[in-house]
Image (tube, rainbow, N blue to C red):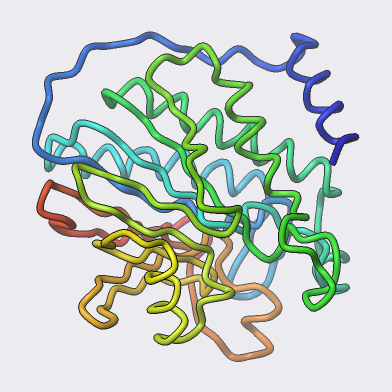
Length: 287
């Protein structure tokens, strides 16, 4: 991780990265904000099968399409601020042999590539919202060892938020949320309501979801997760649950398990009363 930190600092300071356009604008306050997922990008993974084609270039195209989808919701509801919740697995990683063989980029390229891509994504959104807040947690694909042997804090995805903060340091209305409970969960407070965010690999039952909610020690309006690669909304013991999908679509694992899926994310409109409504952001790029 120290080596990666040094590489990233040198890259940002070298001046070789493209300039991100930024012009601050004043916005009139409104009564709602957007909370949009940015889950399971699996940047660096490449597949080309009967049902799906996905690679890093397609991931970039999808994020450009995602900006349009978010702005359509903003136009409908006249939303003021945008909260981007990146709940893990931004990179493909090397956790399984089959994934390692199918990855297009190595781990360092994955981290820097996805961090630069998300920075560009946030920079564009900053032109359309009063404030853009980015929050992230780690998934299971960034770990450095086998599941049973991996230490909780050792995860390459911890570098992503750090990179983005350095990259967008001159953007006055882009904020990186560093107020985390730990690397696996954080709470967003939006208009007075608390939204607990996790990746979801450790929260695979209603009992564990209830336990996670109790662990944070504050009233939770909604439990937000990722990991299962499809959108889903429900209630667990009276607490709303929002699960956002994946950008990757069907991969080798899905084919072997006969799981049909496609790329999607979840966009929620939030007021002082909680979640007003939510939209499926479905992507035709790789269906």
